[in-house]
Image (cartoon, rainbow, N blue to C red; front, side, top):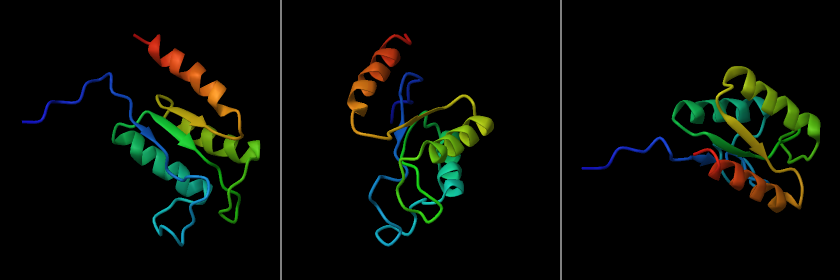
Length: 107
């Protein structure tokens, strides 16, 4: 019999990837609306952390803060219990360690 999942488990979802295309995976969310919908569906299933790569209106990867703001604010409007983490540029490793420390201190 499988053991029930602990409430201390963190499920991290990476719904898009930075270089994946719809041609490689027809189920890949590439519009802001699709990314938001995917994150919210995964949150309902228990995921709590999301590593996001934003896309522009044509579905191409973008680093523009407006694209991230649109996605993250929509997620928080609809489900404020979840954390949306994003990676926008090289150097994220430094920030990842800050997040790791925060999770360790949550008790």
